Length: 338
Image 1 (cartoon, rainbow, N blue to C red):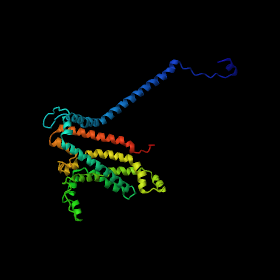
Image 2: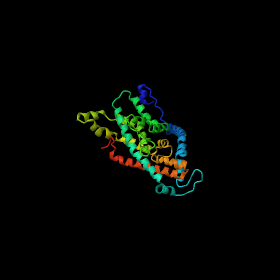
Image 3: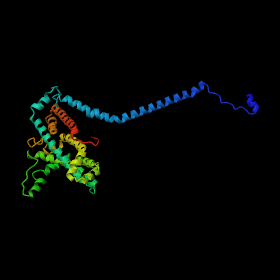
Image 4: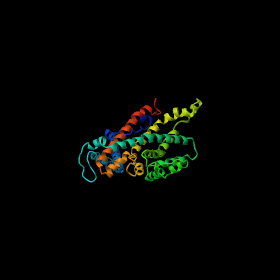
């Protein structure tokens, strides 16, 4: 107590003790250890989650390596051999590829038939799908019902049952000839004539318009209606609106559908196999590339040759897809383009 506090009769307020440096450091040490503990727990939890993710991804990786990459590598090796399913494979180098392009007329014909099928059927299918999508975009009642009904051909078109039905429809005594007979026209066997057999398959492919139609319909719903209203105010007719608004804004959808349909068309097999009876007839007019690959591999037991054909098909599809992407920059319009 000081003299001033004694004179005034008041007691001096005690001051709290000042913490020592050691005392000040103790809480920081405890905070550091607790922070390290939290980091350890977080790291342990992250490792546990990573193992869980790997566990769920394991079936996919097994399928990738055992069902996809493994067979692809094996087929690449077999394409350089004379493997025949009945004997051991012997290395023959590029013989299969040389024979394919220089001495196999049926291979050349299968390429011609498949290319004709793709070039004709894909544009017709996309045009038909776009036209129907524009008709459905007018606000019809029961749109969901019509959309589901029109999508069914895409689900059924590649089935064996539809292919058999198609063969009956275009047969000598089929519905098509019956209909033509009402007008006095004597029909023919459309699937048994070399001049018309391929066209029946093209019609079947065009009939499976459901998937691109639904995608086109979704794209049409994304075009702002204000653009059409402004065009009508400026005096633009329906054809001008289609050329100046609908078509440019749908080019990404057209490109998407075109790439998918080209790939799918090159892989068509069931229709040709069923309609032609498995031999590509008549006179190889429906000998699709995939059907000839099947004949070589599973009928003639030339599996090495079939593997080479499979890799050629892969390269053809990859090249066409790359060309489509390169050409898209000249005609596909995106909303952020300037």
